[in-house]
Length: 451
Image (cartoon, rainbow, N blue to C red):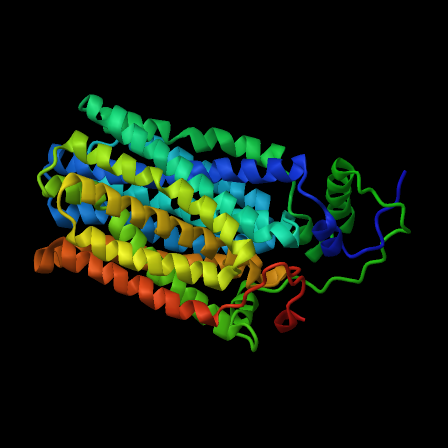
């Protein structure tokens, strides 16, 4: 039997071309990501219907949107810690199971209180999944294409949100119980969790960080074999691994010298992008209805706006390895700010659709770049924790944003609302310059703060 390579595991992963096994990791994680987006997207359409069926006031519809983000804030923070302790794949599968079951159960609710409880549980699973999935893919990806692959992973969000828009357009208006059928379709992730648990490998970088070198080497060797890169070098000599750090130590390490400024900048970007994105896109169907468009036409406009997400991701995936992380993120955030202002002052169907598609294009491209930057910011022992807490801080903004929309609309209408969103995009763009740009560079494997 061929012995494992003498090269460090990270170098072996970075030396590989893109293989079928990389594609399996990308698509396997991406399908989970798309299902996540579908669930988040569906609620924006359900809110518009329940506001009419249940005679909900704006404060109640805001609560439906925000309670899920409360769960997401908790889930993102705890999920990252769990993924650094128990593994990326295990936590990824559990998150799918949690939010899939809770979403399916939402189809059976008869009132607001039960729906709020289930949406909180859904949020726990959704919040934990996204940072874990991006960490997982980044740890498999060769350095020269890592940013592009993580942006392509994030592009699955557009697929899921488009699926939500299609469900919103065709299923929800079809009957009085259409929103229940939409939630029932959202139970699919519970089934997919089994495929993730048994069909995808664990991150070899994480396995190595926990001293499980044989398992890590087997996974990397399988990748090398699929690429025809199997080495005949002598067996790998490995160093002893320090005991796993506690959750408190990992959180403190995020603010250690060399990481503290990056963490602060990352949290600001995550907070601002979440505020503007969820404030706008959760409310767009309802805003359009309030402007006089009927439910079906409002949902149709939202579907067209959503279709611009995928080109935004694809352009960001190209730019992130050409321009670098920071420049790509700044360009897309600037485009988001300008588009937000134009959408807020638009009148007439054509302008609403065009400016909405522009906002969708730039905003989702910025999301792709942000998800590429985030796991690269931290070394392997802290990667999921750092990514999860950045996402958790962002979810605080996504809680506040839907609650802020009704008073802002009452104060100055859509123009004021979207100027506020634009201001948050500008702040995020300024904070981007505190981040490190690791284009083409190997991931850090060890944290000095934990050594």
